[in-house]
Length: 490
Ligand code: NAD
Image 1: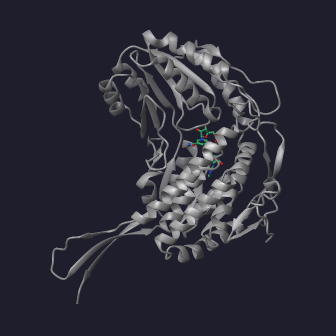
Image 2 (image 1 turned 60 degrees about the horizontal axis):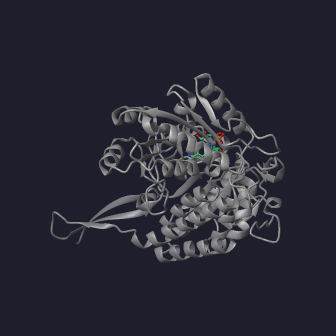
Image 3 (image 1 turned 90 degrees about the horizontal axis):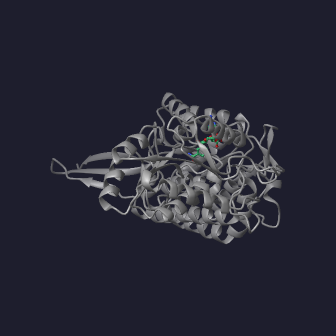
């Protein structure tokens, strides 16, 4: 195996894209590779090797050896490794933010913020290792001790998408490591270098070989190999609903593996006329166009009470007009490109469909004619519920807005879709806020702000948006199984 170390900050990490198997970086044995593209330029950054079936088997076998070692390591040592990895990531952030921007496209400020959140996740899980309590259950009989223990589940197979190349892998890697599990992660082939840098920080922090393995390849082939493997006990996936359903079925068929599914949403935003409408529009525009709209919990369909509607639409359009599109590495840029070329045609089809349904363009609505994959921040008004932009996650910089009249009506419209990840409400009335937050079918609700993604709180959806949570105590539970032991003293 070639020793390629992507943490060598003097060199371009895209020259050294590799798999991590049993503690060593390798180009693998498949002979296959694919280009990694800078979405701001369309230019190739480097060639990413694919794992062969033998490489995946080697990764799982390494993870099994890693599990046998790591599951016996005391919680305080697991804590130390996670905290040291966090420290190294903080130290490497200036370099790593550039790597993240190069492969994903988001602005440098957004990359730094994402890395700060990823580090926060490492630190949160590190501290939670101290609190992996079991419990004693009062016995029914003298001389019997009844204990409930929490044990690491085993090897976790993790799959992460391209929109948050640091935060999403961090949630899975840190959760698994904190619990005493080992992990084989297939990060996105479109944004591999950031996940490699996370893994390097873990290794440099003293994580034993085999506890964390990183592979890339054709997603469906890698996931099939990992899900069919009898040694893999846990599946954690972040991505689209269609793929999540497919993996859940495979996980059930091949050994009833436990699943955490973090899938898409289409977050409704309800703005009442008593809200601070200008502030709501500014917050919503910032949230909608963050990371060029490629955020699963972004506010993404907007219902505004009729008397406040015109004001909200105008203000939202002005906020969109102020955004400066460009390469995320440039200081003046406030919105980067879409992460891949295929997302451009998806945006076009959403806009065309909305216009065909009678919507009007308030801002943007088209691609930007320059190199790279730039779609203008788009605000659409008078979008009927039947338009695709109101029914399907656009996962891009498109904000469809429509008026509503009553709370009852808007709750019905907000809950009409099969998803339920995030939802938001803006109002000055505590009564309305309470009624709407309890009436919304969503895993997370933000009232008068968007701050719902933090390390110490559960992050997850209901309905087709997923199963389970990441973050919070729930995130660690996802990598544990309980064991009841009843002992009679003889
Ligand atoms: P996609 O469905 O092709 O891929 C989504 C992610 O799943 C990618 O990272 C991909 O590598 C992975 N993937 C695909 N097939 C897989 C398989 N069989 N096994 C394991 N992993 C697999 O979609 P896309 O074009 O990359 O993104 C479009 C849609 O995906 C968006 O509209 C959005 O709904 C969803 N998405 C959601 C999130 C999220 O955070 N929940 C992130 C990225 C994409």
